[in-house]
Length: 405
Image (cartoon, rainbow, N blue to C red; front, side):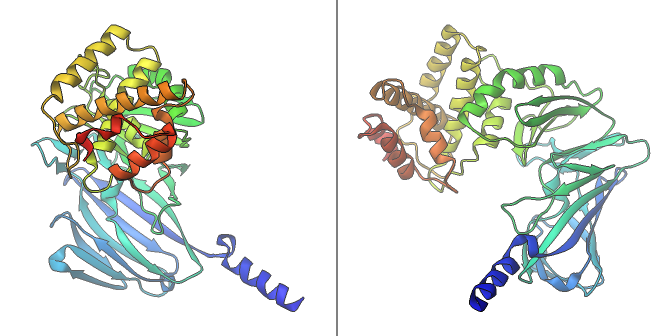
């Protein structure tokens, strides 16, 4: 009996419900005059954290570090090591939110006198957390807005005025991530399935909020049939003036330039492509970049067609375009897939889907392969072939193509 009681006590002590909970507060003040944000990390009990080793990225993005513990810049300023002080302790610094895109002179994130559009990832750099066993940090984000600014939108649960709960079960170190938008903002909201969807943009930035929400409403049932995920929130943000002309996904959030069409003249959709990547979360390993990119392109068109948004003749025109774009491709594998490789990869996926449907008499499809890939932390071309043939129940003739060797 004593032995049983001992093991029961040990089991309960190791349970997260019995972990010592320590508050970790992120307080952010936006500074439009300088394009920066002032960030303060506060720990209610610094003794539970041995250190936080931050990856500071590009030189000059983070500056003016102050702490009542110990702070050391390392690796020529590329990393910073924080040893919190005992008791209530904090680390503060400034971060540059105005940042240009790597491929153009346009802004990837921007702060104007009236609004700010940025990624929460910028506020707190990624870090390696070394903490005491049996400790759980309870992270919250508070935003102090400039005078006259009305609101802020994030993909995190709201717990008060401009306050949000940050909780990512896949990470030990919870930090605010995903797209955020603050200032004079207009928004449209809907509940799709079990997800609260918000489309938001600064006023007078040309964002077609209602058009975007309508397209998402049509696509949603077909999206969830392939990718059975139910995020509590999804935030889609956009802007126009001097912003990067593209689309990019983040934590339960998407950025879309206001001038981009929801569906282009060639049948492609940057919005749906990023939505697929956000829901699929398929991480292709080195040399197999074509797979994740081609799956995103394939489903962006397939979902539009399944929802009744693309006719058969228009779909055929898309296939002819892909055939032309990928005609000269002789090999799919590589570290970074080109547009031609992605187009050729989509053709391979379409042929594989047809092969699976034929041999399963319509009972299975590429959707079954994709759902199996979603369960993996990362995937290679070889694993993709193996999973596909398991679903097919036989050797795939399509996947014997020399393109995959």
